[in-house]
Length: 477
Ligand code: NAD
Image (cartoon, rainbow, N blue to C red; front, top):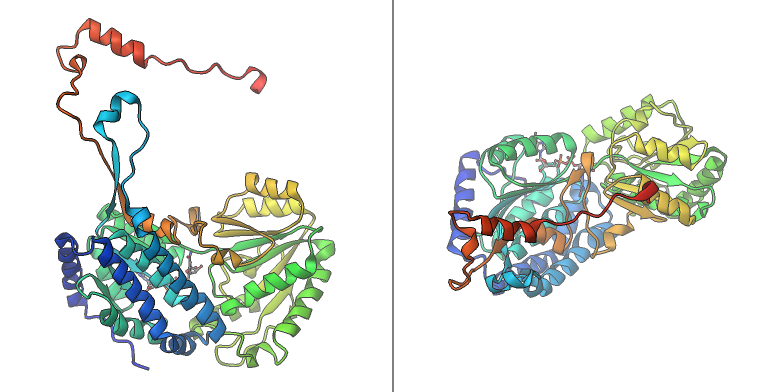
């Protein structure tokens, strides 16, 4: 596996300039060309799937099933759907307007924003770099992809393959760490799409503001799980545990912590233990179905959080002395605990007992808006309360992480979990400017609009623009 070569910093402006020239040349605009480039990304993913999976195994210990399903197969499907949808998404829109404006032919053109920068994290390196990338291609933009330096095997492979499959005058990979990304951020871009943590998200947004560059921030945070006493505790435990073990908990939509009525805590833990034994009969650290922590810094961070908890470890807690860390369940975790401070982003599952769902909702509402709010309940009234009384990127009922399989719903955070959206048309929309246009015929003359403004014109305009406002409600209805 090749080592990761950082892009020389003095080449970075040149790379951006080439992409700018290509964008200006109009080459990236034709739909046939976009379609071909999209298919090339799919071909690259499929023809090199073994190499990609090996790279992710080497970087993250990612189980083969998780790499193939979560990083390659789903991506290829989305590329094909994007290519098929190009005609539909890109065609101009002609909104309904009042009759007197119809001769102006009001039109909304779907215009590519220009040259875009995509900065990706390490946890799902393929899908989180390629998913924004296919939206950028579909929109007719040229793009630089900056993969994460924390997954060197993957990032080296991507830098090797992108120029082999795609037009190097339109798309480039820049590899590197903070210095290279800082250089990229000094330059002007027409959109920046960043996926990662909120601390760096603020650096990105600040740098972008200097050029008035629009930004998408796909961030993380602590995604809570509310468990209602009436739910199926056994299914809830199985699905939450699966979510927590996926990529060893290093997934942005990972169920971070559980709020459960106190009297249900032990039943829930018993179910978690049972499913854990079924998932990993040979023990998680010996299982090919369980990944590992990305590096020693993150491993140390997780161990330090675990060492400081005042809760009780009821399952797991051991490491293999390398980067493995068992799925770890901690009960009786109370507000202020180390496990409830920052996003865990690892296989630790704190359980916080609460009196009832009201307390759980109040707790969630007192925190930052999460990327996902999970709830396990069959109670329709509670579902409606969650929609009305809480706010999060998504609200997912009765499962964990499966929302990622739905192509038709937007994915994105709010507040501390970010802003902007992705997946298929939503990604395309982020890289597209809605350019409005009218074309007013010369014989469409309105004599009243020009000075000198006559009294007659004023009265005429006033009579048509003086609209009645509905009366206020009586007794609030
Ligand atoms: P990371 O460390 O790989 O960083 C992400 C990118 O930021 C990398 O390309 C890195 O080079 C760059 N970067 C790092 N420091 C920088 C700096 N000082 N200046 C400029 N660029 C810098 O990944 P991470 O942030 O550890 O990723 C994990 C976080 O991402 C978690 O919070 C997770 O929830 C979030 N995440 C969100 C989504 C989503 O779609 N919402 C998806 C995956 C991960």
